[in-house]
Figure 1 (tube, rainbow, N blue to C red):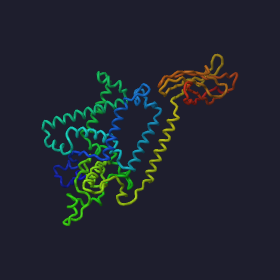
Figure 2: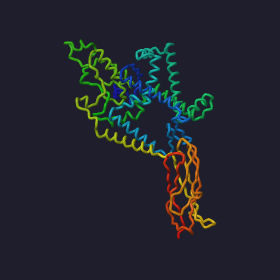
Figure 3: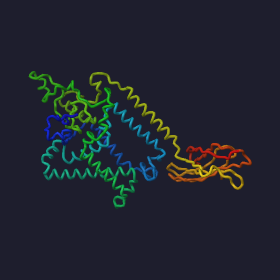
Figure 4: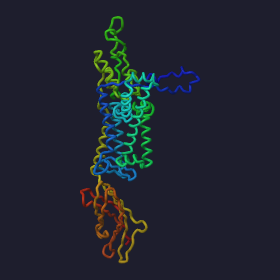
Length: 472
């Protein structure tokens, strides 16, 4: 917990005891800093935001490349279409994501939060706009003290307009993953979009504007559950952003020459410039030790390294390291928990890929006529009726043949049934299986309906059913 959160309840007047559990929010003006880690964060920000906004506009075989078509229950991801029956693929993807997050947390702490989390990414974008319009940290502090000037009001109005525009585009892009975006935009412009499109765009606009522009670090501190349970996954070999207190203490402001003068005891390398606090997006002091508010963005590392270079001291007073490494020990990279997460990810990905490679984009369901077990025709044949529901899960049209595989003597009316299905189309086909009791002795037995595409090399689908014959 940071110093600003440590409020002794005993010092609060009795009349205000009801508010002792809460602290008034203090505006955090983050100072802009450059460095290797901030450049990496800029790259990840551009990449993630760019993919998010650009992907809905990518076309694939005449349709949107990534489209989650909920009304039709079809998820199109480039050349693959997933149906509700493919739910296990979604489950596998979520499991891989969860284990990957656990793996990275055990290995390198909260790098997800610092580099690729949507909250962090969009907040950084909004802060970029703010810095360009209102200036860096000191300028923004001065504007807070003189907020009623015409220049400040104009700049802040412009800032909020740009924030709102980014939020609207974010909501539009998000809805574009569920509604064809090339149809959505014209419908919005002429006012013919569906009510739910307006609703979700508005909701995502408010959420983006509020989270990235207004709440900012409050989301990370009080709303994000990941910050709360991350410590459970940390161990002494987890990479964290930490301050080397043994090297930096005691702190002493001023020049190095003054720090090492005979009049004062030798000081540590920390010159107490407070830049590490000024650049922190959550407003903490990393020198107080590991805190749940730290999102491992490494802004304090870049700031401290810059100061160390200026004062002629080695970099790394604040650095990525492990608790064991900070104590002078050897970091253990391969450890049971990390290996376990890695194996789980590998196994799930292996199963996912194998199922995807051997996946047949065809589904067959067979329903027997339950009104009667069998019937006898006017010529003495014994018949069973079935209904075959065939679904083409591919993104191209196919022609299919339906044949029967069963005991000798059973025949499928018309022998071979041929059907044509467009992409995503399904048909219910009534079929009849019969045998002649005067030619063949037949008992109730298993049968298989075989559906195979005749114009493609996809694997056939066999569906088991049962033929019911009268007792002899």
